[in-house]
Amino acid sequence: MERKVRVRFAPSPTGALHVGGVRTALFNYLFARRHGGDFLLRIEDTDQTRYVSGAEEYIINSLKWCGLHIDEGVGSGGTYGPYRQSERKALYKTYALQLVESGNAYYAFDTPEELDACRDACEGRKETFIYNALSRHNLKNSLHLSQGETEKALQSGFPYVIRFKMPENEELVLRDLIRGEVRFNTSLLDDKVLFKSDGMPTYHLANVVDDYLMQISHVIRGEEWLPSLPLHVLLYRSFGWENVMPAFAHLPLILKPVGNGKLSKRDGNSMGFPVFPLQWTDPATNEVWHGYREDGYFPEAFINMLALLGWNDGTDKEIFSLPELCEAFSLERVHKAGSRFDPEKAKWFNHKYLIEKSDAELALLLDRQLQEKGIRAAAGVLERICCLFKERANFVSDICNDCLFLFRAPESYEEKDVKKHWKEGSPALLKELYARLEQVAPFTAAHTEEVISAWITSGEIGFGKVMNPFRIALVGTSKGPHLFDITELLGKEETLKRLKKALDTL
Image (cartoon, rainbow, N blue to C red; front, side):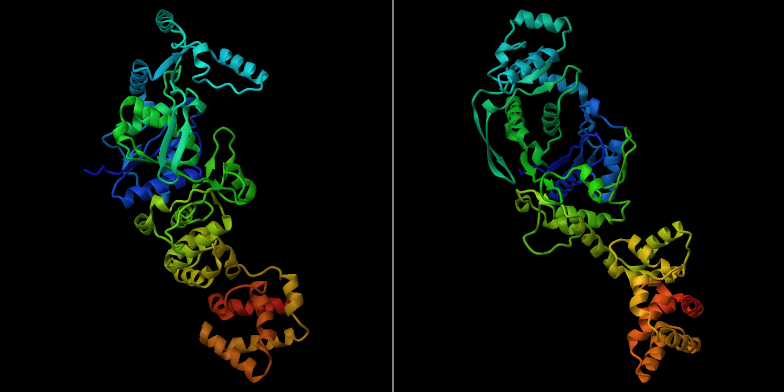
């Protein structure tokens, strides 16, 4: 019987969820959906010294905003819980002791000061200290001490850790679903701590034990965990779980926009783009970090952008809904090399989703932003504005800023535009335009344009001589949508009022 696909996203609550973490969650989610499997959320909070208040809630809220439904885990429940590692503390020691009993792990009683002394001695010889097969027999551990000395230290309550006993000089040939065959020699690996003196497991032990107990079929995680792969595989082997060991896939890095180095949280604030899904205030420093949601991105655009950072479906297609991504995704199409993050491409994705939204949906969003500026308008007017402005906008905030002139008459006029378009004959032409506009009825865009175009054509005046200074009078600059759409939205009274003000001012 084929094994059911079960994948987990297992972040640590040490701060806000970086875009790299969201992409890891997304690829796990897509893989689960593609294969009719389960997507789990497990909180790995074994390192209590790095725990950050509010981080767990932030992670859950971020996944909700992204539309990634959790089938099982923290906040959702399930039959394999608890899903918060700090609540599973009691079971890890049992497994650590099992490894000691089988000879695959050992007690280490070295104090931090003694280990620091070893490091200093190695540095003096221009060597790197590694707690491994070469050094472990000369250190204070149960491999070097007698059984009596070991038992005495344990009974006296002397602080200890449990370390994995890395095999000596074994060539491991492992398979990664993205990278193919990867090789490690155990002589180059250290004896990692599995169980700490504070009674908590390290990531390595807890991760493997929980994946086994939760029947995880595939571990899809970031490239930074690739060096941990040999230890995790050896832990499965040491426990006798090789026949149910998950398949492993290590995702490529997301690189800085300049393409040099891993994208960090600092890059966002320094370069002016978000690297977190939601806004985050660091509780320790009160530093505020931008969020994609607060910066006006649609969650579906954000997810679409992230999906193409390191994956494509083999075609030139770039716009995918979440159901389409679930249908198309495969680990075989994930790249090995890192993917450069492009802030401008992120805006492009948002623009594509914005122009596909209905004017009614955009109008609701625009209404909120305008009300924050003390501006109220009828739904029909807002829908018309969205229709006119969305082709030029990346965000609803762009529409909001671009349309403000419709509600607030210009207090000044763009100097370079005035210099370019307001000529000696402009006042006379605009006075005649004023007189003709007074007579236009109905004052719709189509009818007004028909009347004014007929006057300009019959008088052989030239459209630019009239339209450019007319636009400056209404908008304050030479920018904006079709001029007669503006006049209809403003109405006859406001149009004439602005025209007169420009004539008096300019």
